[in-house]
Length: 132
View 1: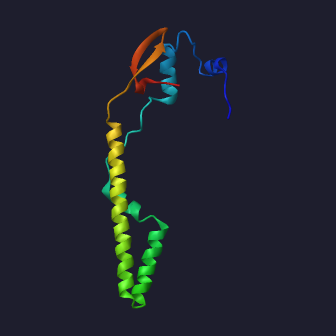
View 2: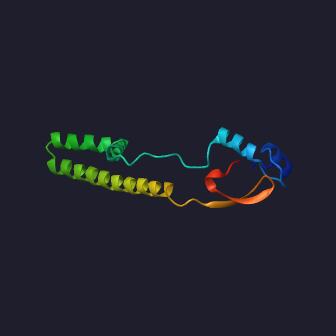
View 3: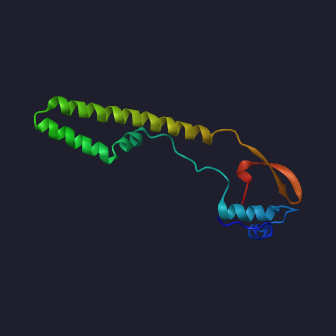
């Protein structure tokens, strides 16, 4: 692991330990890196979540096995495999749906305030205003 001494880090970040960053430096860094926010997500797309369940190779193998079983006259086996694939898809869909809802909730949660040193003064800013 590579560690930097304090002075090297301050030089690399172009800051002063007594004054912090200036307003001009903050604007410049935000232009380079953007705001400290998660990217905006569009709404949950049900169609996409369903299609995601069909992307697994194992699902395709099981569907082929079900088809082969059906062709060979093993109808019970074919239906059991299909039921397993469908149940797996339903469970996967609901897990992914809950995860997407959680992400949406995080994106709209309250804004955290942070104490920073800027222009030589300690001040409170929204976490989205933090910069490297």
